[in-house]
Every structure is written in structure tokens, then in C-alpha cells.
Image (cartoon, rainbow, N blue to C red):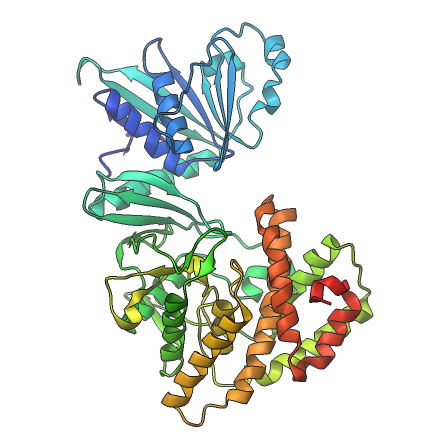
Amino acid sequence: MSGFIQRVAGQPLAFQVELPDVAATDRLGRRLAAWFGTGDTFALAGDLGSGKTELARALIRAYAGEPLLDVPSPTFPLIVSYDFPRGRVVHADLYRITGEDELDEIGWDEVGDDALLLVEWPDRADGRLPADRIDLVLYMAPEIGPDARVAVLTGHGAAAARLSRLHIAEGLIEVAGFDPAERVHLQGDASSRSYTRLVMAERSAILMNAPAQPDGPPVHRGLPYSRLVHLAEDVKPFVAMDRALLAQGLSAPTIYAADIDAGLLVLEDLGREGVVTGDPPQPIRERYEAAMGVLAALHTRTLPQTLHVAPRVERTLARYDVAAMLAEIDLMLDWYLPWRNIKLDGVVREEFHLLWRSALNPVLAEPSTWVLRDYHSPNLIWLDGREGLRRVGLIDFQDAVLGPAAYDVVSLAQDARIDMPEQMELHLVGLYAKARREADPTFDVRSFARSYAVMGAQRASKILGIFTRLDRRDGKPQYLKHLPRIRRYLARCLGHQELGSLRTWYESVLPAKDLGQ
């Protein structure tokens, strides 16, 4: 059981935290800020002087990442709103509210939309708090100390599960030896996973919060998209590939503690040094060469297809087959083309599938290897203190499958997040081909070049759809800035002499500027 947050006996949805002094109250606010965020509500109750505003102030400062941020009490304005990079925070004090009409006057029912909502004196809200919330009551505790408090947190609705996960996570952090660590929220990726850096004086770790994902609606053959394209739906695939990469002598993070059923891992912190530099970011040549060397080394080895997760638990890697690749490419048809106001009839769509099947079948007939799938700059950490292949730290590989070697080579050499000069792309691919030929003189460079072009066009088409979907469906417009770069990559790949039919289809459907014409 974690020393930070303890379950209240007989109340399965309630937890308590002892706060012996003001510093402990501040620490509670910081830990809550690392775990909760947009869409969460805290109803802060307690007598006058119990520390509600102090707790809210600590939480807001931690959420902002600004420990000296001025956070005034909202007693007189009633509501204070903040806009931070992580999202909006609304701090409300309803002490002076005397009736429901006053709640209507301040637009109470909409005030916390798309925000982290902190409400002092929540009893004044007259039952109009969100059903999904955490009630946090602060009590004086003179038996502990003159300035001590006890906080009791009770989860309601969906928030109850999140509060229970916090309890499990904190227990795991304690088991791993990081209970004293400062919790620092990390900006996550485009998935539902979240991350917290656990910082101590001499070392740090990463808490990965990866709850199992429910199946989405069926999109083809009765299967949801995640199963069609073999995306990880729980933490087991990450654990399996992590251990497999370590067994190959590569720098994946060591797992310090794991609750596989809960989807919580405490991982080695590989650091913050990446493979790019500057603003806008540019590739660091030496580091990209080393990362390409990792792929070349992996692709010359006989790699297992069944990986170890835990005692008597194994995972067999799925095949990155035609059905999966077509389902990914369809994201371009379903999201990117409508965003560009382009409509397709069934005949044109069927022609698209036929052309892609013809292009993909020869590539997928080649010997397969591990495809880490997101092998690009956000997921590569530079470890200057290590040697050889271990200089490249690997993360975010839970969606790994068995498929064409060219896929990860394209992911790196046509990095979706940075501008890759064409000369450097050619240099990196040349290094890869040279290493493969040295290991195996029968390695067919010409055949690989075609596979590279096909995988590049497939990946670029998919990403056009994914980044557009992130904007339209998920409210993440920041991904749209990458679209011009992805279109340039797509044009490069479709320029391969053996992809003429596919290029003709794209030219007939997309605006000329999308393909650099």
C-alpha cells in the first residue's frame, strides 16, 4: 500500500492522505496535477482555514509548470480562468453564492467545459456539479500536528476509476523505490497513454499509464480499426517488445516495476537528449546514422516471432498484412480527402484498393522482420554515455509487428516531424543498404529501393489521414503543420519508376500542389 494515498477502510471509492504540514498540502496538489487534467473536476470542501485555496494554488502552479505563478483567491471574482499549454484550468469559489439564479448568471453549467475544474464550497452549487468528479474534503488533524490536515478523496462516476488507478500507480512507484520523487507531467504522444517523470536527486524514472483500450466500432469484417491494423490495446505488447529489444543488446528502458493487468509501468528514464536540434528541429547527422545502424543490425538477425511477457504469458507478433495496410491507407480517403473537399465514388475507391494490392503484394512476400512502426525522432533518445548500438534509446514500440524491413527505414529517413533534406535521406538509405550488403552479399538493393518507395507512399498516405483525424476528431490542430512535409514525402515515393499507376491515381484525385507539381 502506498504511503502517499491510502484506501479508506469500508469505502471502496474513498482514499485519504495525511498532511502533517503546509509542505505536504503543496505536495498533494503537485501529485494530483501530474495525474489529472482537462475534463476532471475537484470539489474542494472543508471548514474555513482548512487549506482549500492552498491546495488549489499548489495544483494550479504545478499544472502550469510555474512554481511562482500568482494564483489569487477567487473569493471575490467567483471564477478565475487560466490558459496553460496543458489546457485550461478554472478555479471557482462559490462561498458568496446564495441561490441557483446566481449560478445561472455566471453561466455555471458551461464554465468548466474543456477545463480542469476546481470548486471551493461546492455545496453552494446546489447539486449542479459534474457527475464525474472527485470530492476532496480537508479536515483539521490536531492529533497529528498543530498544522496538520487529513484529505479524504472520494471518486464519483468515471473519476472513481481514475482515482483508483492513482492509488495503484502510487503503490507501484513505492515498490520501485521512487515514492519520494517529484511527479512531473510529461507531454504525451497522440495516443491515450500518459506519462509522468519521477524525479529524485540522483536518478529518475518514467511512470507509463496505459489503460486497456475498449474496442471501437467495427469498420471492416466486423473488426474495429485497432484490431485490423494490430495496434496495442493493453500494455502487454510494450512489455514483450521491451524485453525482446533488451535481449538483442539494445537500449530499451528497463522495467523497474509493473502492474500488467492495470497497464502501469515504472520504467528507466532514458533522458531527454534527442536526435534533432534547433528550432525548427533539424536532424543531427551522426545520431541518425547511428539510428539507421540499429535497423541494419536488427534486420540482419534471425529474430523471434513469439515474445515473452511474463511467466507463462507470451505474445506472438502479428503480421503486417495487406488488410492492415489497406485499412491504414483508407484513413487518407476517410479523413484527408474530405478535409480537402474531395469526394470519391465507389468505383474510384475500388480502383485505389486494386492498385495498392498490386503494389503491396510483392513487398509483403519478402522475408519479414520486426517492424517497430514508429521509428522516428520523437521515439529516439541519444545516450552519449553508451557505446555502439546502445547509444540509441528506443521507446514507443508497443505496436510492433512482423513486416517489411523497408517500413522502419522509411519512418526514420522520411521523419514525419522534421524536414529531412533529400540528400541526407539518400545518404541514410545508402548506409543501410551498404550494411545489409556487407552482412549478406545477396541483399537486392534494387528490390529494396522499390519496397522503400511503396512503404514510403503507404506511410505518407496513412499519416495524412491520421494527422487530419487528430485535428478534426480529437481537437489537435497542431498536427496539421506537418502535412506539407508529408505531401513532399509522398511525392518523392510516388516518383519511383515502378509506381507509375499509383502516381497516376493520386494525380487524378489530389490537387496538383499536393504532389509538388
